[in-house]
Image (cartoon, rainbow, N blue to C red; front, side, top):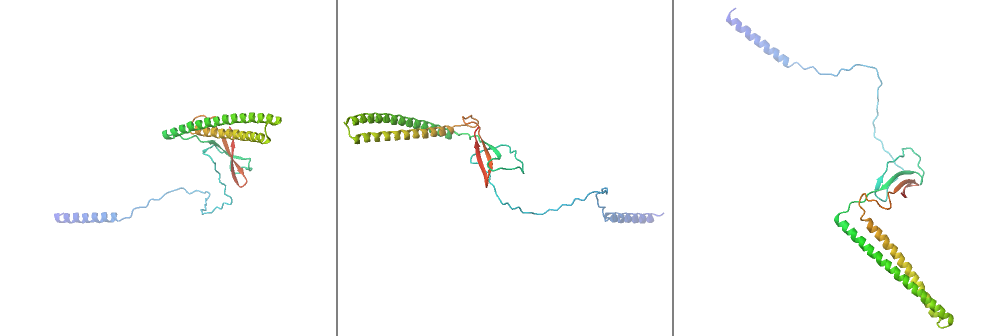
Length: 220
């Protein structure tokens, strides 16, 4: 075979190789599919749609104080009786921590309340002393009136003084109670979280009532 024929065959071979590569490049790739075994079973059909709810009676559950609601043991569908059934129990919340300024102000309020209580106690002693003097004066006037030494007007005036002194004693005692309550309130401002108080840990219950809910406090 001559050299010219060999070159021609090589050219034809290269051309056929290029054509084959070009055809292979344009062949589409096979698509991947999921395979599963066909079995008999139930068909699950669901229906989704939007709905609207209408609430006829709205009940608001609220508490006048801060606290922590304990675990609710009632279940949906339980019978609820107005004023009897306790829905939930609440324990009082711990007081907040006092900063330096608030603590200083609270201690000043306590000192002021103690001073006011002392002043109110002094007014009570003074009112009682004046009442004793008025009673003694009335007794002397009554004896003199029986002997005819003083007029009825003097006796009535002394009786009026006794009544006024009694009213002043009652007013002073009421003022003393007010100052004592203010002292307790001022000392309560100094209670820190976790401190034990004389009142203890009370419970307040939320009971059902006609037309809504009602809070009922229970002593410890």
